[in-house]
Length: 214
Ligand code: DX5
Ligand code: ZN
Image (cartoon, rainbow, N blue to C red; front, top):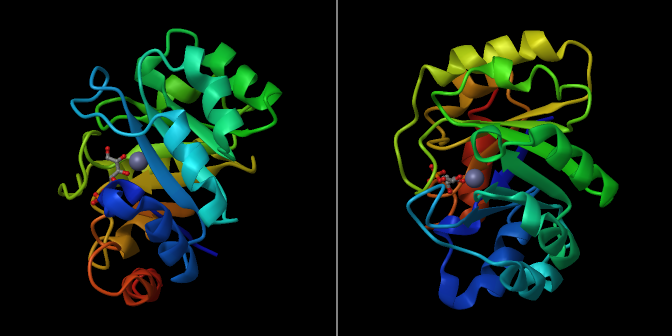
């Protein structure tokens, strides 16, 4: 069953708690939280204190996507703030294996993300330790960008690499009712959607993505 993780990057930041509650009620499976540092990506967003403040607005898993370099010094802060799953970028971490082990030692699920230009081979030696692979289907930093079709091939290759391991493949960027089918057919099990969910009726928007996924 496909999981849909709305990205609160496209929410109204002036009422972030209410937005989290609304998207939970509208049928979100996970809440996707895009953390940006103005260094690894050209944008700045949420510190751990923001995540702590919105934690009470939903019981759904908090899926924290760290677009920060370095990530390692902040992993415990995000875990303590209420993250259930913490994803780091392979490109932002000189010691990816160590970070993955550390996230697991904090009792959280561990994900690793790949930018569009990063090959799937970057994950070969952490495959037995991770719970999720996040394939960026846009260059990270902003919502509302256009899906990069070459990433479909990467998703298919990852599906083969994973074999029978219990690892989710999450796809993030440009996912909407028009692109969802190709993403799911390639092997995605979780999709992030920001601009396709926030705006208009959230429940209708989430359902439209679900309906077009089959
Ligand atoms: C981009 C973020 C995405 C973004 C997706 O750096 O990682 O999660 O919010 O936004 P849409 O769905 O609008 O492409
Ligand atoms: Zn994201």
